[in-house]
Image (cartoon, rainbow over all chains, first blue to last red; front, side, top):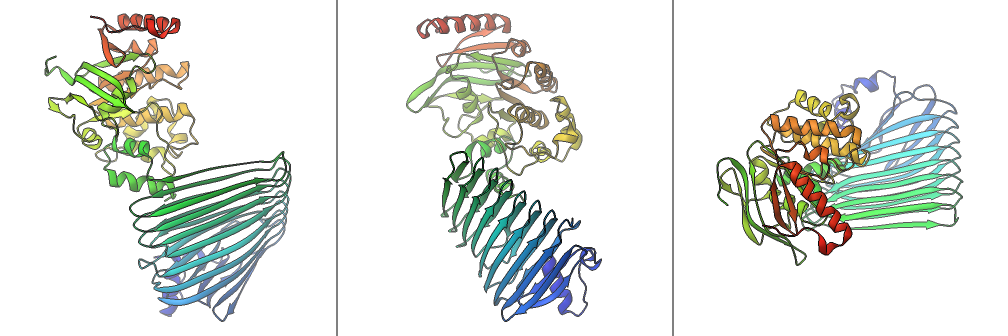
Length: 313
Length: 249
């Protein structure tokens, strides 16, 4: 059971219990079921507000310049009901020199006909660092569409690192779209990991525009699909300034009747920039598989170990 | 060649083709139980092909011949079935595993968790457990580090037959003694080792050695003698491929 489910259930049962790490008040936290705000608490250095919308919420999170938020900010969002639409409008403002981690837990444990839309705007100020770890917990029925779209702006010397992980339950239909603009000496890393079964669809669009001198970018995707699932990964990196360095890295493992495609795009508009890409699609690497089997691990277990390792589980 | 109980592995008239070319052209070789047997040969002589064929790697099915292991004909067994019988292989270029820690990797194949064995194995290849247990067996390890982790994992397994394909390649001269000691230790524990190597220091560990040339074993005997023969073959191959050592009685 995810944190989100535990909190919602406790709330519905009138016990009002939340996990101790949130209850302690030492962490900033947001808990939203559909458009119902269950918890919104803050800590010094960060302002959090959550406003209900007819079918979702609007979230504003602002970290004060120079603030170093010790504990990750917890965002637990989801839909407990089997049906529903949830729209999240999120705005993150990370002040100059600030440092903050967000841990987002998105749960749709009972989804049969659920749609989850997220529109995010993120601004990472000069010299600031924002890390955003998003883990999805889906049910076994796959009746869910997850469509997050984010535009991230990283100012000079800022760092934005995100990690999207979908490995619990059926993916359903997931379409991620991230666009990052990186200024001089800034850094953006986008990691997307997911697994699809049945007729799941995973579509990832990751675009990093390295607009400032010495900007760095990495768009990395690790997807595994089996049964009749399908994945598409579009990773684009642009080197638009002197000495910008970017890399697109995509691995998709395909089993059974599943299908996959990868479209890495590298573009340079300044001759001193350099962007590279690598993509591999196919079944599990033969050498990896045989190495594990030579360690007395059966074929199916070896495949699972390789896939789960790739997905960071 | 007769199959005797003294030999853990018997290879009889083994022929293997790859991409239409015959790489192994009637290999006959017997490996004594509990011994370290070195296999030398020029590049392209078929050493790695023999290693993969013995392990049962996909695409390395013999066209002719037999492989007997501990009195059982294993020619048609799968790689996994051979592994279960105690055969393992350290590839020349070990695979990299994303998201798999060295600690977990070394624990694979053990009948039950044995942290002490894992620590001993890492120390035996001169890798500090505090540093390496939590590292990933992926691209972040250098070639030499990955190689040592692979050897440690083979040591952990306590295989009956360890096929080590150039375990010393990518290993600096200073670390060579660690590798040699580990191989010696494996043999002391009862593992029979088929060692593919060119380095005199490593081949010197062996009890017996064989020279593979043109897909055939052309000589078997004392490691020192086989090393000299190999050196001669190497010199001739540099002079011209036609002069390289051929099949001799």
